[in-house]
Length: 85
Image (cartoon, rainbow, N blue to C red; front, top):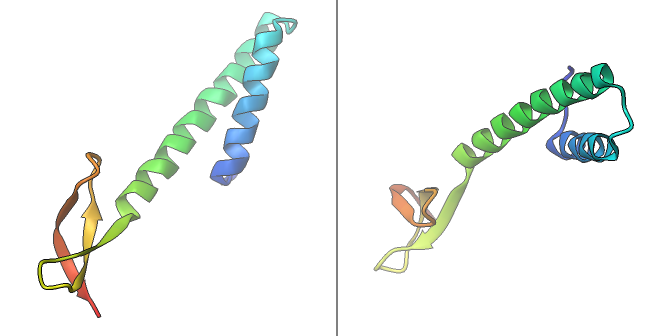
């Protein structure tokens, strides 16, 4: 599977779900597209995890200076990593 953009992978996943919900496919074809869906979902998860690591949040400190903080999953900013002018 060539590198696919997140949006393209999600659109294909939605199409796969629709095909599987129809239940009119032979078992071997259902398994084939199910396996494709699993690969796509793993690829999407990888893309999301990589994006999560890149996200940084700008916040102001007590002195009014903006600092870049790494984003944490609990919605709180972690310790400042650098100052922004």
